[in-house]
Amino acid sequence: MAAGPGDPESGPAAGARFFCTAGRGLEPFLMREVRVRLQATQVEYVSGKVFFTTCSDLNMLKKLKSAERLFLLIKKQFPFNVSSVNKGKIHNEMQQLINSDPQSWLNAISIWNNLLKLDAKKEKLSQRDADPPKRKMRENDTMITKKLKTEQMQQIQENRECQVEEQIEEETLEQGDLLTKREKFQEEELQNEVAKAVDTHNQNDLTFRVSCRCSGAIAKAFSAQEVGRIIGIALRKQFGWKADLRDPKIEIFIHLNDIYSVMGIPVFRVPLASRAYIKTAGLRSTIAWAMASVAEIKAGTFVLDPMCGLGTILLEAAKEWPDVYYVGADVSDSQLQGACDNLKAAGLVDKIELLQVSVIELPLPSESVDIIISDIPFGKKFKLGKDIKSILQEMERVLRVDGTVVLLLSEDHCRHLKGCEESSIPLNSKGSHTDEPGAEKYLIREEKTGISETVSPSLEASNQECLPKMPPFGSLVPLECYKVSLGKTDAFIYKYKKSCSSRYSRLDTVSHVQVLECQPSSSSGCL
Image (cartoon, rainbow, N blue to C red; front, top):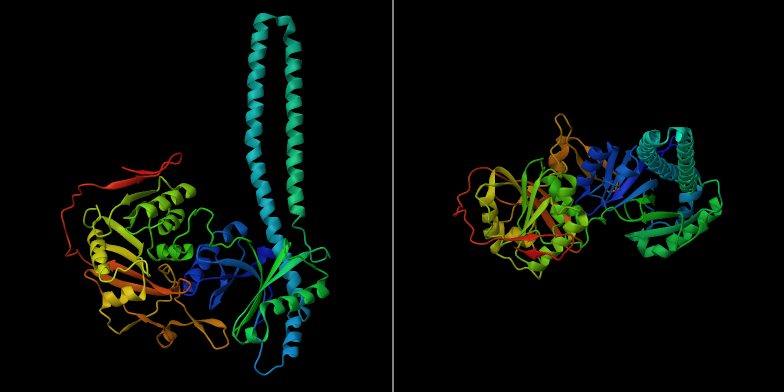
């Protein structure tokens, strides 16, 4: 099961081996995403992690939406046998993670540096591409000025024409010298940045830090600090690297548990799940993106979140699928104000409209919405109980026939909707989107060893996980169900499709609707 990241000479161009951490239940979404977005191969998973090979650069890797963190894989292997081996022997086996195959570590460092250099070169090229238009504009301005001055001087004093032309040429040359100096300075700065990313496996001044996570039987024998110390000492002895806990050049991540041992290098210091464009976090961004991907949003559609809260679902959807009409509704002033602040921070004020209305009295005509995506509130603060039926009835009313509803529901919501009926539905493991024509469907099976493998469709029936069944609700027919982790609690992403016209209807007139206008330069108000 041990795996090196690749050939150091060819680097990322030949395909590097990565893995991402993911929230429990989001592995199918992440597997689907890396295949589609990164054209990844050799995609497999263990609980909470997805492994894949790709040639993509850092810019593409940053676009992953369903991943928590991204790592360049150094090594993956079977877990340590803690029950039958003494502590001293396990200590030696940990050291062998480095000493038995040092080349895999050097390969990983080389690929990591190549990724950084490639990113710096692309930034350099983009700056060069941006410079010529500016220089041409300056040259054009100089030529126009020269022509005008020449014509004026010819009319006023012909005998000074040559002197004026020489003067203008000297000014042009001086400007050209300044441009050349500036370009040389910018190039030197970029070269300095690239120099910081040079291969370091042959240098003794590389600084590092080890981050460890232990769970299961290994955690009872060793603490994360002990493992980090063992690995750190082995790296220092093998390669001569220096430990730096505050600001290291490289971080080594190690996770040991009962099903695997994995080592990697964090590609980005900031987790992918920490969106820079979200000012105030609400629903986990990875869950919000997964819900939007299940909805299969198309350009030109009308997407509604009738209980939008801080607007996380709409933000994730609008960033990924911009050519759509988005509306968010909520009854809470504070939630809408937070959503408005998030829209400003994300630059999506003109993409998403906010309404202050109740979810059971939506100011929309019947069958006018293409897609509804919503996180139905739950927990101690929200006691919806049987009110969830009224909420779904109103959603059903405004949704067009063949429209889609994607909801995040708690187990309590499910019990109220199914009348405490004890039944089950197979887990849909096909991923976040409908497979392309001819694409093979996969079910990923995790063996006792923790190694995942792709399983043919014929084996699906014997390997399906049971989830609470969501019965049809009126004209809403359930299509897919995913169980996902929200940290301390679990929830379910359900996808419905409206099969026929709803029996619920009312007059499509509204006496008063409050529309929240988000102004970038002033405080928000309701009209």
